[in-house]
Image (tube, rainbow, N blue to C red; front, side):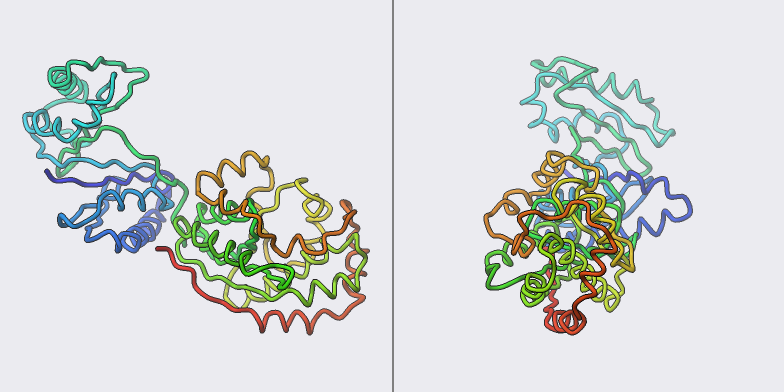
Length: 391
């Protein structure tokens, strides 16, 4: 029996005259992600992508898994493809949905008839299909309010499609539709979530990490690289920049007021990150900061940090509780890696009593008291960029 994956749009369907450009980006992303799954054809119609396996070697299970992580797709349906003939629909589709029906106790039928020339109306399709299901699977009962399985019959322009249940997609809009952003990626829980959330809004994500050997270990760096690798399942390939930061941190320790150490470190990180962004034609910075979570993430501290920036700084987690961030981290499979006990450079030389309400004038005076320029340049020159690919 022929099989197909129907990928339903969400927000893209509302884009008006720009809809075709969003569709094109998502189609290219789908084709690129499915290369490792075998041969598939991809076409679009009626706010839906039709993903069709071209031979028996095509891995449909893997394709569904990859498609569920592509931004722009809100729902996937793995369907059998039938002729638009009621007798064929009623006989052949039951074999296809047999496994789902055998393990269910209740069901309902939902019919969608976009081809109005089809001789049966939607309520009639539901009645006919429901009767055949009860005849074939007598243990089932109809429950139109909270069924275990929803059997959907879609009558579209070319064929009929039947499936028993759908899979939630990633939602959002296609990566590449909203410019480029640089994620400050630490080894914590929050920053991978921030990168995921910006990619969901169409940003192409690059990542920058600051390492401070020997205070941070190779395992800490490997942990961050693993986090970047995990989120490529959603974001696509990530350009990764690893900045040597030890010398700057030691100079901060020796030449700045201890209570301002963290905020000055953040400002210098931002300066380095945005200079790399300017060279790479990246338009914004992204951090995992959540308002009030730690001393460096108060509103006063964020104001002092942003004053050092010449480009927008996006903080998609800023209004979220830690539990909400953790929930997303678990969903995208970064949580278990984020809690591995390998410290990043943000925890090096942490002051005992950091200033939670820093004054911008005091912060700028402390930063200007030392010539950071040669060390910033040295750190940028020592940065090792490389590509972390989506498998």
